[in-house]
Length: 292
Length: 182
Image (cartoon, rainbow over all chains, first blue to last red; front, top):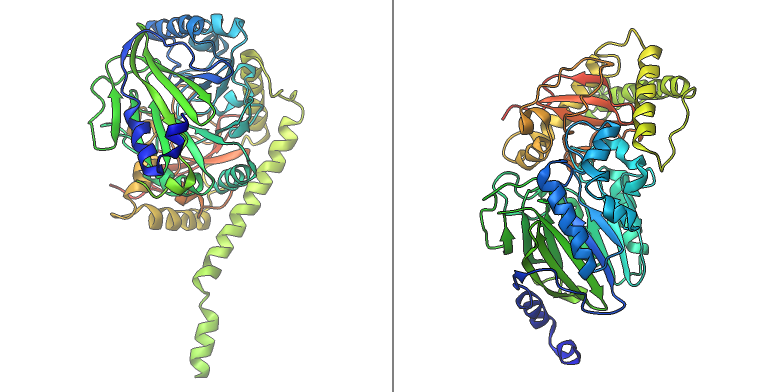
């Protein structure tokens, strides 16, 4: 660790990338005792068999990798949103986690009724964009990427500027970078959000919308992940491009993340329990931001 | 010289031309909000930590109250001809041609017709279908469109622009062919 800190920034970036790429069997246990741990699901609200299997696998993983909360990257509920749909598409599949006290923090996707902001189990407190600080040196910012209007951008700039957290983590539905054949990157959003992320030291950005898993090579000092296949799946939906560090589009996936000091350990797990990606990323200091 | 001056004074500037419909739209939105407030004041408030049953009941109650408060509402009440022309000018200048491609791509995300092939019938006071996705609205366009209060937003259905009551899920007004064709 100490040796790593002495390396020049550009080399740290390379190591950050090279330290990933580990696929294998099963969920890995946490790397540190007092780390911040959370799960990530995206495009999870179908209520079909695959969604239930993924939720069961996530609950199983928690026995090995205990996490306190889960981020939802939007499309939390497909189709109608009657009370019985909340039950079928969220409350029943995730019951073991809800009963165990895992808190879900949702962001809105294009399939979500804006009234979800008032749903108690999504912990949005009536707001379509909000931030929260669980503990330790991380603050999370949930954005509504469907409707990025000037008041939201002003709010984000203010919140990011005021945050002294080491890890500033943004999550929202539409990806700024993507190798997806169907949707691709949201260039409009990138034009307004990326300058704020760079200016205010955002380290990690998580999105869904594309129904696959993709880890993007760091862009301007920021780590980007797409995890939009927690129920929906677009098989063979990735047209691998030079920005892809790792892509997977053959089964449903959730993510587990752990923040320990300057390091972020991540793993991407399928509904059958296969680990299709894992590794350790360094928080990239702002002086590295010029590195593409 | 005098003639030129008189002509210049008679022809309003571009900014002046846009100020009038912008004011008109603002005052119509304000009137809608006042009517809305009176209508939904009777309904119980929704908690920020509500159950699905409370959310569904509240949405239905708000929609019914607003519909009852404006039974004669029709297309063009808020999007008057002058407002429509003004909004179309903004949308077309932002979304036309090669430069407008990223904005058009953004508005296709979640657009029920473009993305899911879903037909959303546009009628004032009708509910936006619960199973239909909501389109993104390009951020650069939102910087130029009039800012709306949190109770309302703009959305696209195909090439049409709708004014959408966020919590009641109602179509408040709509503007056909607002977006330029591909």
